[in-house]
Amino acid sequence: MSVNNTEKKDIQKQITAIMNELPVSELHDLLRDAKILQHNAAVKVEYDKNRELRANMPEPDKSLITVKEMDDGNQFFINFNGHSSVYTRDEMKKIVSIAQGAADPAEGSARLYTWLERERRDVIRNSHITGKSDPSLGVFIDFLVNNYTVKK
Image (cartoon, rainbow, N blue to C red; front, side, top):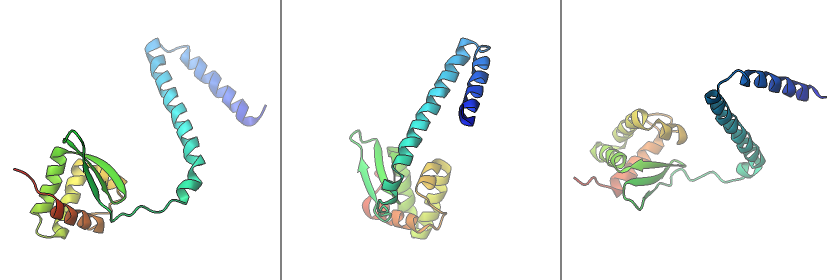
């Protein structure tokens, strides 16, 4: 028996011993967590299998900004800085107001960054925005100013 197999058997025994002492409600939680771990392991296998494919993909055009209003009219799908996010109608109104109310792209960038930091940190992280003066924010501000207005 290999070292890894021996270690696995030992861990399984420890888990079984613990399970024997848990109430059913805790076993449900344990089962849910185990299924999550199982799913994550399968995702990692797929991710690793596709590593070479991803490495050969061209870099997305980060200057490309697209906005698509969803059919229900209450959400907007925005692709910005190589990442896509869904915004509510209220969020869209807010970012357009920030853009329209700024004296210049630098001010708009700083104000938008502050709002994103407070309300949508996921966008900062996923879009790799480096700070208030990130050039992509200025491009986004210009795009919003040139393409949108807030209806009163």
